[in-house]
Length: 220
Image 1: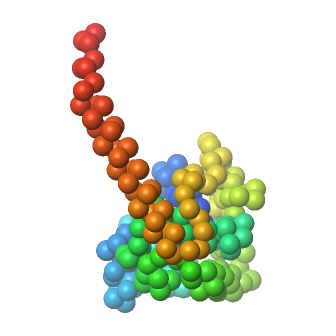
Image 2: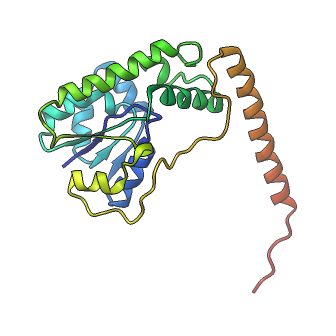
């Protein structure tokens, strides 16, 4: 059985990853080279590679659910969502502030490196993707489960669907983001990105400086 996370990024995919790794599965997450192969149309090659792994989430795997469903009839699919489309969009905005322009994945998927000022386009993509996934698996409740970690779904909900052991921890939304600018203004987003990254690099430099002057631990 393959377990495929088909939720978009910033929907709790890392929480899904945590549960899969806890079950000892051979897991694959976002991979730039795999995504580039997806863009080149090498779907069959990616499907062949999937034979050697058990679970998947993040790019490019959520975009391949139809082909995966056809190749692996025993696969189970997990559609992670946020409690509202706007919550998802704000989370995407915060990620762009922390990381800067998202040229590797988001520019090719959503059409923009920075989501700010493009709320309608991003929400349309989010809702269309979720709707298409649910429509594809309509009438097959054993194939797809829709989960929101923010509204009560947890590892036990997931394990029951998959027929896996109950997880030892009921972690939810393990990738909670830093408190950064979540507004929709592109100029303010870039300004806050510069401030955030300046603080981050300054903090790292201070940590290294303190570590360099810290006296070595005494021998036991």
